[in-house]
Each structure stands twice: as C-alpha cells, then as structure tokens.
Length: 162
Image 1 (cartoon, rainbow, N blue to C red):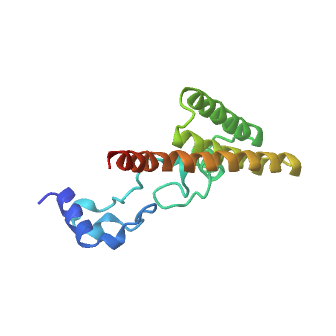
Image 2: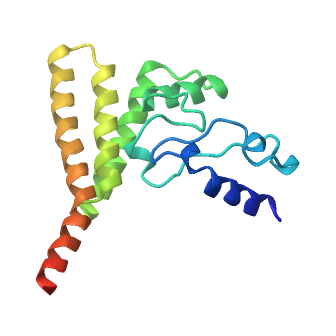
C-alpha cells in the first residue's frame, strides 16, 4: 500500500478530521501512521483560495495584509507601507482586468472584496475607509450570487424538464 492510498484509507475512515474550509495542521504522519509522511502536512484546497481566509497551511494569516507582512519579513524585503499599498493596488488592477473579461468570475469578485477591505484598513481617513468597505460589501454579495448561480441554473433546468 502506498502512502497516498494509506492516507486516502485513513481519511475515509476518519472523515471528521476534514472540514469544508479548514485543513489539518497536524503532521500527516500522525494521521497516516506512515514513516513516509514524516514532515508532511495536509495542505488546504487551493480552489477559491482568494475567497477565504485564513491563509497558509496552518491558518496563521488572517487576511491578505498578514500574507504580505509574512513574505516581507521572511524574505527581508523591507517593504514600506507605501509599497504594501501599491501591492494591493496592483492586485486590484489585475482583478479589474479579470472582471472585464468575465463580470461573474467568482474568485475575482471575492478577491476584490478582500483587497478593498485591506485598502480600507490601510487608510487613515475614516470616510474613505467607509467607502472602501461599502464597495467591498457589494463585491462580497456579487461573489455569493456568482457562487450560487450554478445551483440556481441547475434547479431551473431541472424544473424545465418536468
């Protein structure tokens, strides 16, 4: 039996260890009992990553600002607050390009929501922060609608068949 099949067997036997949006930070060897899994961790599912926090395999980054700060310290980048703000702006530019191509792109809608919240946290003007948060709320709602749309379409198609 391979380490992968052992892991799959144990996961099937212990499904309560997995949740829909979290992952185990427990070392894989403790889950599988396999020497081959020493030092390995069960990582998070990457689909829709931008739409949900926390980030990293152990959930140590609560928001995108924490992710930027982690890499800033880890790689001794010494980014200024201005450069961090520019990274958020650049992210917004790319998200806007994605939304121009597909206005219902769920991950881009969710990511824009998160970037706007980071932008609000980075501003010193309370009114400006309020505007960014209001705009973020709009994109959050759009992301939820985009996520629920395929289910609504399937339900409508099922109803049309009857």
